[in-house]
Length: 245
Image (cartoon, rainbow, N blue to C red; front, side, top):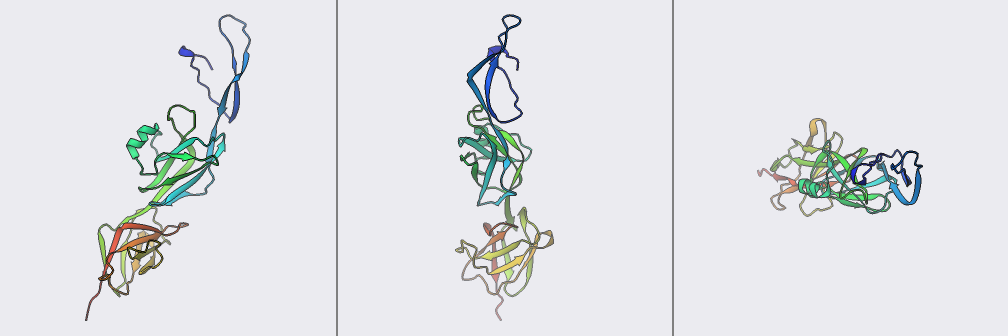
């Protein structure tokens, strides 16, 4: 690379590894290259993530394991909506806060955990290498993540006990063949469904309840995306009415 004003030179490397500096002074013609072995550069390469699918429901943690060469255990990463350029850490925090887990530390084994708080079907990964600029991040090519969620029906959906009723679910990443269930508010593990259904075409699911919710209060939705455990979406609620003879 040519050295510009202020002694600045820009290098582009094709592979990871440690490099030593060779320098050629230009004060006269015929100067040879001189090796300065004490001046080294570490070239880091992030090649992707180990997970086959980088996705998780909102309200849970997306765990990624970065692969590559030269990862230090002092690196950082964050998620950004697909197509948005990586920015410096401070700017990212102002734009997105903790919506997609914020800026997280990458451990020495390449693992990183993102606490997802907002739905987004396509998220790019930005990676900040320790010692590379002051908070500069670059995109990890070929990696895209998803923050899955059920966001509706909005408000409280009303069912009638003993009557099969279909509802259309809104959200991000919903697919036919997945499972939705309604549970009591105190059922944090989604373990005791009061009604359960398989999602069909157009995100429609038909539920039948045996009893009203007059005593228990509103129910909350739990949903299992393909390949994921049940996740709770407390903003999606239902009440069940009963018709007395």
